[in-house]
Image (cartoon, rainbow, N blue to C red):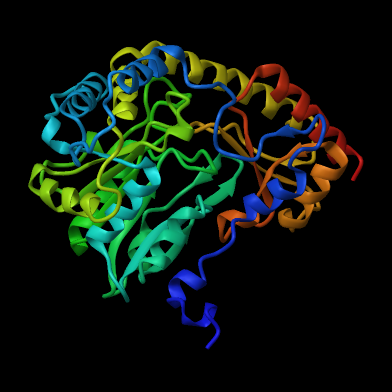
Length: 388
């Protein structure tokens, strides 16, 4: 028997990332401007790395508490209390090995083989891939693009529900579209979940990256304490910590032991020295996050202005996250075009084909970078568009 054939089908059929394919094609090219991945260009700031290094120096290299060290869970509670206007207890939070593990844990807790998870597309591809690997089926429900940007009608969720549906995965602000649900939309989605007894897995990673004043609306603004909502989040974006692979889940206290058990049987916890950095990020990082959001706002305005001026781009300035998801007149296959943009413009973009149904004619551009680099990248893309 061929070894590959003996592997579990869900694992064997896990998709190759369309983003990585373009990155592999362009990697190492002199002068290439890499706007393809979902991270900024700033290294983790010193106020975060220093406590981590001090922890290592003190010998904090042993097994740790699987829910997270008390100091970090308390910092998570205080952070949420500051930003969401009410008191949170540390018993709601568990520390995970990145936002990706938080998603996997949420899926493990709510769905199994044959179940269905509804999610909104275009979407970060890891959502559907993780669902399918778990043995469940990912059911896409499309956002619309029009002159007002990306919009969504919650009725589409209800139309997609079947007896097998167990969870809704809602990412707002959205990667890649920047779509951001307003309070009424969140209420409508929550009402649907209540009506059908569904879980909501709420990915609110980009809540702080919101360009319409203050943080983005959250399910925390509309839910009751006992609603079936699991929040997944990460330290990666706000505090320039993508390589740390550290995140968290927020759940009702009654679910703490369940999630601790899931952590036990996957990673058995996050290294203590990394968590020390997380404490500093949460307790001391509000001004840093604000500065990153303001830089992203300026970068968004630069890139939408330059690419929009070609008159051949389909785009609306996003209200959240730090991506421009845009189309180009005459381009229907962004997968092929992304390679050409690398070759001819020396800019790396993520093809919309990697983000599922509705993304095929679009490109994702990450603008969370130095303003001069974003401007130069936008000018190169505009030149390529003009030459079509």
